Image (tube, rainbow, N blue to C red; front, side):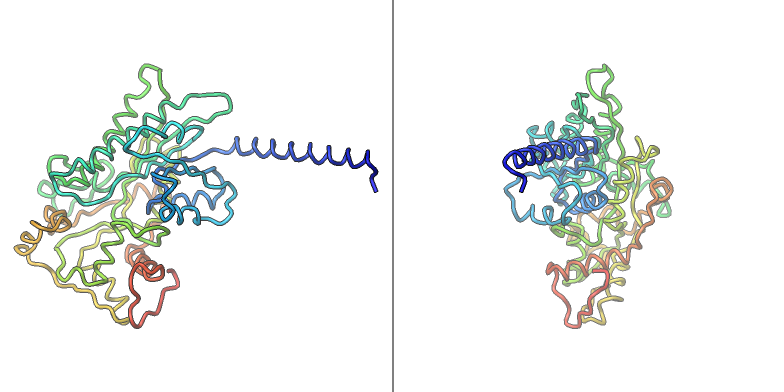
Length: 394
């Protein structure tokens, strides 16, 4: 129909159009800011990534220890179906320098979530503290080395996932039970456990680094914001992790006696919202935010679970453990040893600043706890009770 000459012209036109379309697409991608999320396969990081991918305002890059760990990568890859900007995965390990410069390259924001969360005996605290502190410094140094280059973004702000363990640990004997912790509080390094110490020292190292960074003009200065969540629960997309395993222990009868202890709770989606809001909010620069909806005793946690699941065939123990027995158990059980210093101490916390400045409207802790349990049941991580009724929020 076109003739040989017409076909040739048509082919040339289509080729030029495709090349122009590809170049235009690359220009658009280059103009869209990129966010790096460290440890993207983790509990909190997955929810942050999902929110950013669904919003479609940023390109998202995530670090993983290995691109060959298919089981670990599966929930990351399946997180969002056909996002506007595909998720990019890169290898970087907190224990090694390799990969971090490439990971932060061309990123406007870094959300540093990756950190070990396990219980270890006191004589092995370095297994937690060293990777937490040195890993944080590796990420910070990579951000500071990011140089301004033609067409390249540089890191504007790093949002650090810290913990209430860096805020409200080790000060029980010096403060009244009615004391309400806030962002101005820091834990007592001399009296706290390995995990709390790892979070405290990692956060302190970050603040010290940012304070002294670029004093001679040889590196790039960026802002820092710290998010300090309490026990994180709620609907999840990957593995259950340490915090949800506690609820699993309640539900499976592994806690026949309960300590006279208290935990702050926050939904993981509120934690993710806090990170995303802190990333760009002008008022959040160089600030610290405590994110905890409320504090519950172990007995109150059991009561929440019994109210929901007793009629479905699961009864959770509400029996308190005598102090003398708890002291004996703590000699052989790391989890028990963790709660002994704060026995009978409620650790009340204020989230007013996060609500006021980041706009976080917190999900009620009992709902977040139940969402966690139903999610575990629906995903096969916890057996369903005989009279299982399901939950519309699971």
